[in-house]
Image (tube, rainbow, N blue to C red; front, top):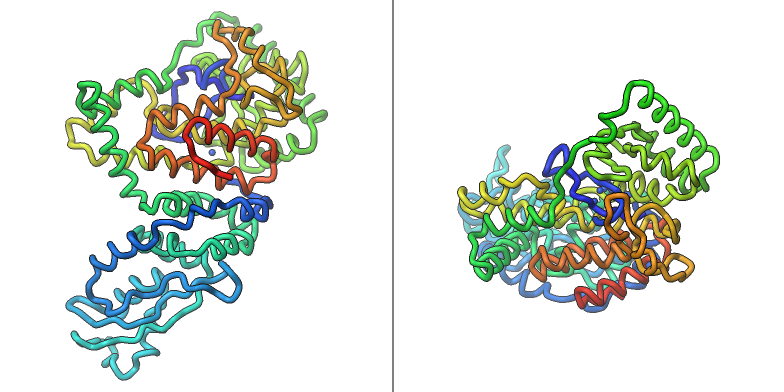
Amino acid sequence: MGASAAKAARKDKNSDHGHEHEGEAAHFDGSYADGIDALAQQIAVDEAKKGDDAGDKKAEAQPTPESKPKQAAVAPEAGKTVDLGGGTWTVGKGDSLWSIADHTYGKGTYWNELKKANKSKVHGAQNIILDGEVLTLPTLAVSTLTALKNFEDQPELMRDLVVGMSEEEYRGFLQNTPRATLEKHGQLLMDVEAMRSTGMTMDELAQEQKEFIEQEAKKAGKSPGQYVKDLVATEGYGGGEATMWNKLDKGQKKKWEDRFKAAVKSIKETAPPDVKEIIKDAEGKGGGFRWNPAETEKNTAFAYTSDDWALHCGTRWVEAAETDTASVYGNITHEMGGHNYYGATNGWKIQEKAIDQLDGKEKEKATSGGNSSWSAYGYMETEIFAELYEFTYATKGNPTDTPFEVDAKGQDLTGERKRKTRSGKEFLVGDVSYQLKRIKAAFAPKVAEAVVRGLWRRVQVDPRILDKAKELFATDVKGVLGIDLA
């Protein structure tokens, strides 16, 4: 069930790990699937904004081309390909076939196509071109995904390509791209969604976040570095001590481990097919179930996942599994599934870039606290994704937090708040809404939108997430951030 990120310590403050706690908020590598048709139908019409301004800025910064290359002409099969090139280029100082092709078509061997189209203007074995020559930029139909990958190292050009796509092209791209391919390039597509929804590159979003930090710090009467440090101290997760486990003798510890092994065996035999699939996938990647009672106690975690595709379990997890194996299905889908499938988070990527832009003293101060910075800025989106994964099993009485105030059958769960966790806290009912509020507080409005829309893209194309969970998530986003996803 929903993580209740009890102040959990992390091996590496800047890495993507996940925890499932018993009552507050604490994941990742992207598995997509066949919900692409549904996604394409739900792309908001207002996503087709702001391409012109972004493109004009780049054109002003690149005065050499006589006519800006067309980077997103309508293709015969909508979205399957984009037309790169077109127009002309006046050769300037420092230009070469390679640099012109790189700017026009992205990385690859496209300079050969440029050479073929301008044979009379390319001289000698070294392919010399002369200043002042006007070259023809041939129009090349390139797979949309290939084009996006071509411009990964040139974010401004990638942004121009993305925002220049029509709604029909964008929908077609998502519909025509094989599921396995979308899965492989999940992080790239999250970046694409962030650019498309805001018209900004990741670097520009980082600048927006830096300015937001400075403004909020000024309001609080603090320096930017101190502001971030204090926020991480209150919102980030730290660690505790394994007091109970360390008091046990060797024989007692062995009995607990035997109970853990028996619980895992029972789960593997009785779990429903979707849970078994997640377990099999994790084990195939070298993960699976791990007995790690000391670390789970230190992190006040029911169970947690790390970057090893393993579910690290403690004594409370064993007790729950022994009482009812079904009570930990949500935890398995949450940790082994949601967190491990999500991948790197855009929120953390943008925040890291923003902190890097602070001056040395402030940057050092911002990262000098004891708690995990990632848990204050990167954790929320992967936690939401994991909560949506477990929604099928988020029922009354389960041993961790719940995604929404209702379960998959519409049963009201708000009474669960009256239950206390072992640490004495109330169970968090509605973790998705809670994490969205954290995103709103932590990020500049445009950055928050980029984070949430990138997350929405992942949610929409994953068939393991129930339609009802997607609907409730969209409702929470509208309520907390005022963003209409439908």
